[in-house]
Image 1 (cartoon, rainbow, N blue to C red):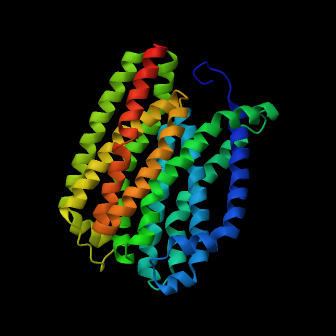
Image 2 (image 1 turned 135 degrees about the vertical axis):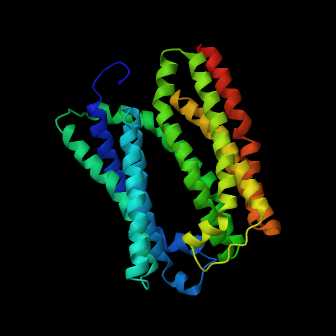
Image 3 (image 1 turned 30 degrees about the vertical axis):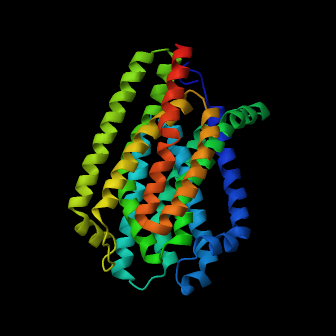
Length: 356
């Protein structure tokens, strides 16, 4: 609609309604399931944590549900070609969360895990909600009917399925670790992944900004320009991952001392090499996944991602038993390499040639 210079206020208004309805439904569901889910997910941690695991799990889940709403808000901004606003809000929210944790560390060093968790993620969860609430005022007069909701839900259902499957794939490692690794190894893996995740977040932001651009180029049938942008984006992304990995490895002692001082992070160089390989593969796969989503070609994702989840679960379970953290990374790399790494680009080229 934006490409055709038509008003889309009604869809923004309907999307906000759906978002807040989803918040209520998911929060209510987790309220009843938190005790059961936490007993399965947090089995590697201390008895003290297990005794309160249900409340920890519920509070964390609510925070991350709100953060998920924020990710939808950012997609709306990128679709409106206002990605700079999304980046400012996101960066500011994480900065505020970081400052909250630093303040708690010095002013209230004996604070509970729950308090620290809320302090870190509350700004990330709340700022996008505040923005979308103000955004709602501007579309308040837009007329919304049943067909608006129906069209929006029918178009978004495919993305919901793909996102749910992606969550399963990307969270399988933590599920396996909760059953196979010690609490110390889980902490090592989680902190290291967070460090690399912060680096990869930059590339993810670039992909989000490219999504509407790629969709518009596809509508205009400018395939050569689209292919050139994607090629340069992947090359730049892999180079960025390699450079970032080198930076993290060289400064790892300093970085870990800041993030979690007093905890032993004796991690081999093999882990850093595997992480560089894994995130380079993610650059390739996530780029083609974004392209197919921008083309509304989701069926191939519905078919291949469950296969990836199955392969990832089996391989991570087996390798984690024998190789620990390194085994988890072996499983992750294999799950991507045997499925989406080659299926998505082949399918994209097939579809682009048919549409050209």
